[in-house]
Image (cartoon, rainbow, N blue to C red; front, side, top):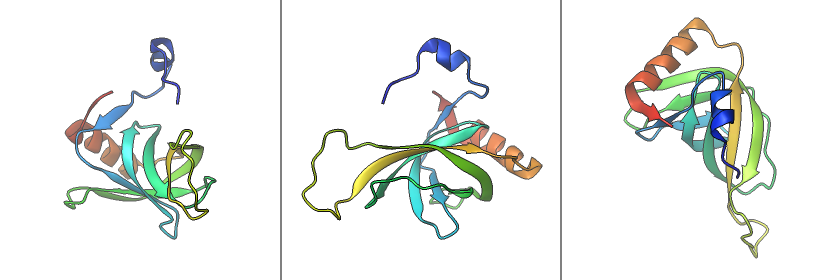
Amino acid sequence: MESLTSRECRLRKHPRMVPSEDIYAVLGSDKDVIGKLCDISLGGLSCKHLTTSENGYDYDSLDLFTLNNEFHLTRIPCSVVYSVSMDNGLYMESAMAVKSRRIGVKFNGLSYQHENQLKSLMANSTCWN
């Protein structure tokens, strides 16, 4: 995956932040994907997850939570921007092999409550990327 240049970072509408603690994202109404958060902004997030599928899926909402139950936010409206393999060049013998993927989503029409809780999360448990 190519890193962003400093010019591209300055063009971002919302600065990205990296969590200083483990935060998890659950995507899909059937809880299809559970991933560990890589970064987050008021515009969206990215997370890494394991799957047996080669393809990404489109989701319309996600939940965020911490294992210690200090933070839990549900039904955040979103859409998938990208889903890429993290197994660059690795060959797996089995068709059922677990694959590592990174998924990026953008938030769509955040409610006042969602926006305030995301701001609080970023202010209290993250550091600048």
